[in-house]
Image 1 (cartoon, rainbow over the protein chains, first blue to last red):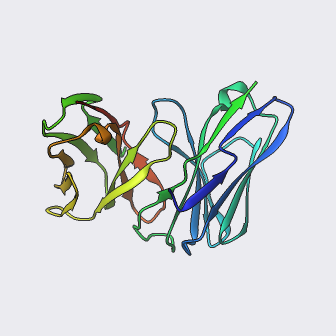
Image 2: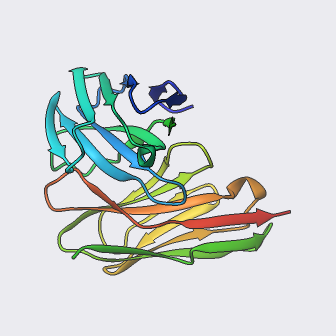
Length: 115
Length: 110
């Protein structure tokens, strides 16, 4: 069992739907991440939150909107997605601050399918 | 440009047949090299962090080593449950980002 919990585990949505992915960690980590992983590819960084503030946005389309309500929670709001956005979405966390070389711990992801 | 290359892409071993996975990197300002294991449909599971050349870490049948140009993940007497994709990632500079290799898919047969 991982210490980073993601819900839902699976999500199927149409291109006009609005949905949210949720991530929770209780390790006291101050950095949280969203990654996208396509089949047989490594994870690709999307966003980084450091101390609840958006630190990195890797040129992600605006149809993906991250939110960090508090130090334990991270959301990814989805709207008007495209079929090519189908992927495994991974959340991770690590101890802050920026520049520390502590490992990132991943959740098991949300498998997203866009119809 | 920072690069991380893992080899081989795929490896098939008999149970008990020891081997090594390679992760070579060309980066400036390495702050840490990380090994992860990923099972199908799961997130990457953290295994080891290596910070400086000469460092070694061990966990059960796995041993990770680091030089100035590459890291090796040695698997001693593997078992079928060691079958997974093994990912190597490096962290450089002052940022948070991990630069992942493409992974090595390991299959251990009984």
